[in-house]
Amino acid sequence: MSLPTDIEGIHEEKWTQSPALRYATMHELADRVAMLKHPDSGITFHRAKHGAKDDPRGAVTNLFSRFQLEKKLSILTMPGLRWAFERTLIEQREVERIFVAGSAEWADGKIRERNTHKPLPPLSDCDMLRRTYITAIERNEAIYRAAVRKMPGVESNLKQIPSPPFATTSLCTSLVPRFHRCTFEDLARFYLGRNAYRFDAAWLDFSGPLIPETRQLIEKMWCIKKIAWRLVITAEGARWPLGDPVRTVDQYVAWIESFPGKRLHLLRYQDGRTPMVQFAIEQR
Image (cartoon, rainbow, N blue to C red; front, side, top):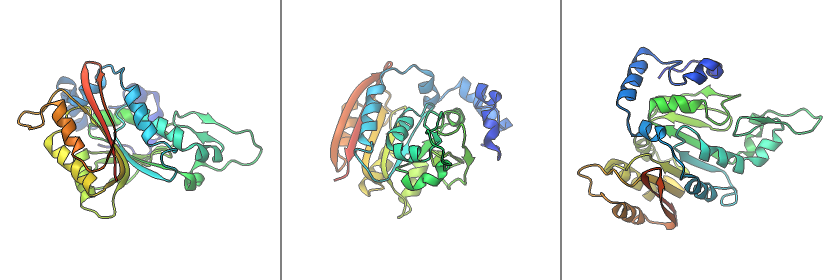
């Protein structure tokens, strides 16, 4: 994917109207046409209306709040289009850092200034107070492009950064240090091969069922503590791949409960017409 070196053009009205096409190459345009005619599970999921996820999302936010962990938190997330969880988490955990910065860029992109006559330091000078290091990933190119304009901090600060070997594109803002276009599977294989790489926590918010390879990688990441504190998994509980021994929600739950650690919650809910399962565990 070809993003411009000067990212400021992303804020123009033309980008807002067609975020997936503004900087697309001919190959990317052809891919987009193919996705519109034959959308994958991610596109289909984001086209649908979702009204039942507020409570599950709130439960996850509570698990990672500053009241649960005062120290710095590195977390892997899957933001989708709206970044609803990430916005709430940043606002909840980054209060001191935002207010010390004075001219504070909030997760909703609005600027709120303190009443003071002293010069206000830039937000970047307050990184010593940062509590939250988000690594966000998205595999689908069209969703990635559209999600960029909703990324916390994008209104005033968006940069392209060097991509790690498992990603094709990587961006950052002052509020989100890393947003990679990649698959979870590629990221997991990379982290499993390097001793120094790990996350404190992860919310793996899948829009479809988990295939066997994905489940194996999640299990490995958890068992060797590449996710060192808490893990939340959300997945669809309806369409199970053919030939997969895990074919029911109960079997899926049994698989997750086999993980070592303390179970924090298990939620079953309907997202539109889709049955979903969310499971949270903590390392002992």
